[in-house]
Length: 345
Image 1 (cartoon, rainbow, N blue to C red):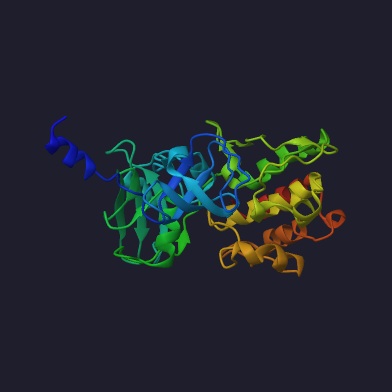
Image 2: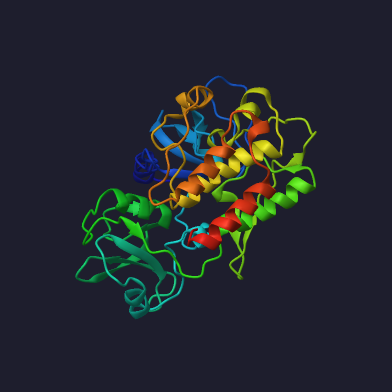
């Protein structure tokens, strides 16, 4: 190797990950070292800052918000999800319809009314359709640099993040997103999931990781519970798997007591996710304060546009005393009655 080649190689610096970059764990990693993260294969982590030039970063595990040091060697950069299985849970997602159909669906027009559809002209892309009182505008969502974007200035890992962003600020759109257009004829995902969980309840099985991220939609638009990696019998002992704090019942976090009633607590959080159109739970509360606040009686506020009766169901799931929480059968019965009265998720 020539001296020029050695000089060139010595000046090649591997491009580091910027803070905010999301990565996926390539393998299980367990450690007892102070301040170093343990994680499981497939966990999604967010880079907080660069620690040194040897490939070490400070990051957090998205599922648990636990922070610590990680090595780049164990991770790969996350790409945007072009086809997100959770989309079918979102009432604003209308699937493959034309622009003309979208305009028809968004009648009567009003400021901030919106829906998302699959692009017919550009397969694989999406279109955000936004209404004002005067017109409907169509914004193509493109896949670029492993992320989703409308304006090539703001980039997102999935459509749910994109929608949440534009519900806070128009950022160049004709108006801010304020009201999702609910898909007509959609069978309640909430009701369908309560039936699935009622079945687990009857078999004395505890899921222990019930959340929107673990819900799949079949080709027949039926919601199904997935990811039974933490599932065990009611009497099974707790293992050392990291728990998703925001979805886990207080008695499970503090005393490792899991039951169908701790699944009911998680189901209440899932309901909140559905009726807030994909927002992450406890949006105003730092994770370090969460457990203490919940212990003292804090509960999330009602999502915008959510029926009061459904919010009351959520709160019943969040009773501190597990014995006061409803069974999944009672939840299903109440959701069926609610579905007959009104159009909901």
